[in-house]
Length: 402
Ligand code: C5P
Picture 1 (spheres, rainbow, N blue to C red):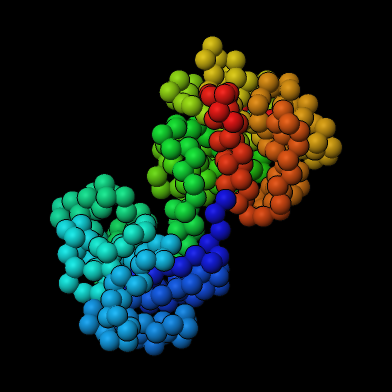
Picture 2: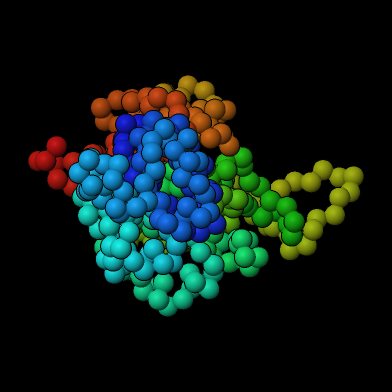
C-alpha cells in the first residue's frame, strides 16, 4: 500500500470560485504529512490570496513565470523534478484547454508541461462549460494522455444553476489522490464484486433484509479500481455513493443478484463476494400489504441459492474470494467456510465490529494460514486485501512466477 506521508505535491490552483476549497485541500494534505508547494494562476489570486496558502503550507506561493525568488529562475523545472505529483484543483475550463493543447504561457501551465511526474486535475466550472463539446474533447484528450481526472460532482453551483461542474470536496479529492498512487496490480483485469444486503419481499411494503451497509463491498470495488482493474459492482440496496468508474448493477433480492452475477461472470478474471446475501426468501410473498389481526402469522421461508458456490462450481470459474462475517470463533469458522466453499482466499471479520462501521478489522485466510490486518478504515483494509489477492491471483495464473 502506498502512503501519502512524505510525498511532495505541487498543488496548482487555477481561477474559479472553487479556489477557496483548494485552501482546505492544502490543509488536509499538510495534515497527512504531504509537503505542499502551491502554484497559482494569476486569476486564482483574484479569488484567494496567496498568503492564505502560504500560511497553510508554510511555503511561499508562486504564480509568475518570471519570479526572481529562485536563484536559477526556473521554478517550472525546480518544482516538478522531485515532486511525486502535480494536482490542479480547481482546474478551470480554460486551464483544461491549455493542458490538452500543451500551452505554456504561465508558471502553472509551463510546469505541467515540464513535469516528469503524474498529473491529476479536479475540474470545476459552470455546467454548460463542462458539457461544451470543446471541454468534452479536452477532457478526453487529457484522459488519453494519462492525466487523472477527479470529478466534477453535480449539485448547486456558485452561479445558481444546478448540474455537473462542482469541484469534488477536499476530503474526496484527497481520497482520489491516494487512490491514484496505488500500485496498478490488477491492470487489464476484470473484477466482479457483490456488495450490500439483499432484500427479500414479504408483501407490498415489507421484506427481510440485514444490517449490511455495503461499505466493505464498495471499498473493495474502489480498491480494485485503484489497482487498475475494470470493475463491475453488483449491489443490493445501499445508500452509498458508488465509485464513479465502476459499472454499477443494482439488484434487490438474492435471486436477482444471482441472475446479474451469472450474466456478468463469464468474462471476469476475479469474483469477490462481499454481499451479505439473505439466507432465505419468502415462498409466497403477498402482492398486497398483509393486514394485521390477532392470529399468529407464519411465513414460509426457502433457502436462497449460494451465489459464490454457484460461481466456484462453474466449469471455468474466475479466481474467487469470499467473505465471512461471524459473531464468534472467527478463525475456526472462517477457515472451515473457506474449505467448505473451496476458496483460495477468504476475508473474515466479526459482525459486531464490522456492520455499518467505517473502521474495522479483517483477517485474510489462505493456504498459508491466517493473516490478520491492522485495524483501520475499510478502504485501507480493502487495499490490503486487493494487494494480497493480486499476489495469489498472479500465482494461480502463473505458478512458476512467485
Ligand atoms: O455461508 P456464508 O453466507 O457465511 O458465506 C459468506 C460468503 O458467501 C460471502 O462471500 C457471501 O457473499 C457469499 N454468499 C453468496 N450467496 C449466498 C450466501 C453467501 O454468495 N446465498
